[in-house]
Image (cartoon, rainbow, N blue to C red; front, side):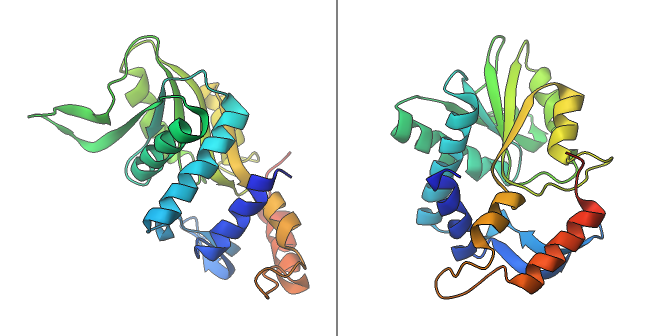
Length: 225
C-alpha cells in the first residue's frame, strides 16, 4: 500500500471522519463503520484532504484533464481544495467547477459555479463517497449538456466495497452504466489491512470483535468482485 494511503487512513481517524461502532445508514443498513466528510472543517484539514485527492487522481488519471467537477454541495470544497493541491504538487493548473442546486437567472447566471465547461474539455468528477450513484445521475446530464465533454473518471475518498443497486459496488455500477473509470483514495479493505490489531495513537481501532462485525457486514452487503 502506498504511503499516502496509510497516512490518509490515519488522517480520517484523526479528523473523526471515519468512525467505528454501529451506525444506521440512509439505506437502512446497520454498518460497523461510518464516514462523514462533513467533519473536515479546518483549513489544515482541507489542505491535507486536497493533497490526498490530488495524489490519488494523479496516480489514477495522470494530468491529462482540464476541469475538476465537484457536485453540490460537498463536492464544492473538495474541488477547490484539490485544484489548489494539484497546482502545488504537480505544477498543473486545473480549473474547478461545481453545480448550483437551482439555476441562477441573473448576474453570474446559469447552473455552474467556477469554470465554464466547453466542447473538448476533459473532466474528472470528485466526490466524498458514493453508495447509490444518485449524485452521478444528477451530475452526468449537467456535464453532457455543456457540449462535447469527455468524462475521464470519478474519484471518491473511500470505496465502501458494498452492493449498490445490484450485486456490484456503486463504483462498478457507475463504471458500467456511464462508461468512465472510477477510483477511490482508499478502500475499506485497505483500511482494515492498515488498522486491524495495529495500535494507532495508543488505541486499536479495529480489534477482533470489530473485524468480525465488518466481516459479517460484508457477508451480507459486500459487492461482487
